[in-house]
Image (cartoon, rainbow, N blue to C red):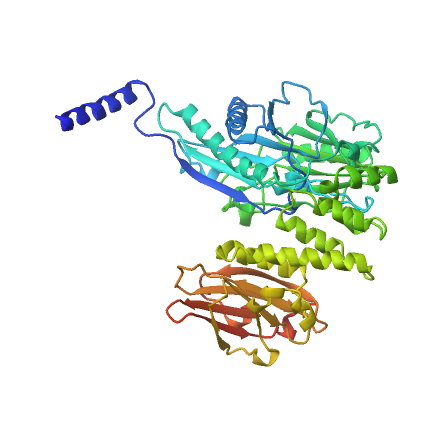
Length: 557
């Protein structure tokens, strides 16, 4: 009897689904890609996420509206999510330092990919000011910060659209974009809140002349920017001619192309940029829809957007008054720390400032490491030396308490070694700073480095991870590599490090990463090769290290 009922329910469900017009198959994610990497660390805690329609077509409008709806459900309650259609509503003047602005728009497949993308929808989402590198203070009373825009990747999402499921497909894409945005928001939750007083020195913004044929998407200020504007300009039937018209207009305003076009993201057929500059205060970029060189065309999956995006910025020449910096230090110690204010604190201010920050309950391990690093002085007072020694001891205790979590423990050890500058050859006195964690160090003698490699066996007992210190011959540098296979991992792991140093010991290029295997790599392609295996039954790590000196004939200096 139960079997019959089950069959009837399933059949009824299928019949109901068909009759409702939803189709037999739901939409699916066909492609979900992120391009680029964060070039700025997370800036202030995000107060707001503003989603703008990136193009004036109905599909783009629906996508951004749905993305805003999805995002409101999943971000913290104190983060305001707003949707605005700049093609229907004028852009107001607003403060943008703690706002993440996202442009969402529909995307058309490239001609070569049109057939395989039939029955699909694609969408783009990018931080509005990512294309111009976010905002960064320079020479600003010793303070510095980066905006959340620089931390958001360029996203493309493609979804299948079964018959009768267009709305569901758009919502699926919107939900995917919203989830990625939530991750960006979450990464700023332990950061400082942007103090209002950091806007007190700004002169009244005048704005830029109206761009012919353009739509103003956003206008605002940041603590180092008197005015910042983003314009949308349709490409028209002749994008090259439109580009020349825009450049001529900008040149009449005193803004010139700084260098030839730069090309980004060839995999998507996306973004060609012309950097702009107008004297010492004005800068910007013109993002064009012009096609890439022929050799890149086959790699493009999406057409460039049918518009120009014009970024214009006027830097604020004034800096905060000393009283503003003093108030920041006293009233907003957490912001003062994360804005790197400790670096500029005087010897008289430092002890009180140090204590005020250390008493904050919200400090993370990274914050404590930052405080330790930035409070270093060439000739410290006895008072500050004692304070910093106590702080370092407490940091080591915190890290040591996490030995039961090898992944987090090894990550924290890496952060500590970086703060203590273990990327340069260290003395026994410096290594003693590690206290109980010094037993994790495995120092490799320079004489043991050779192309054919050497094998080292290290007991795992008492070692949740191993911190390898490998000197770079004839330089003052050393590789500092923390390896920590998980407790249940038996298979070998391989670390791959590639760095080249010239005869003076300066690094001139290369890359680094971790790979599961070397594949076709040859000795000429790497400087350092580290392979390791954990042998639980034997209670030891097997670590093999091979070093190939950089070929002086290939330096290209």
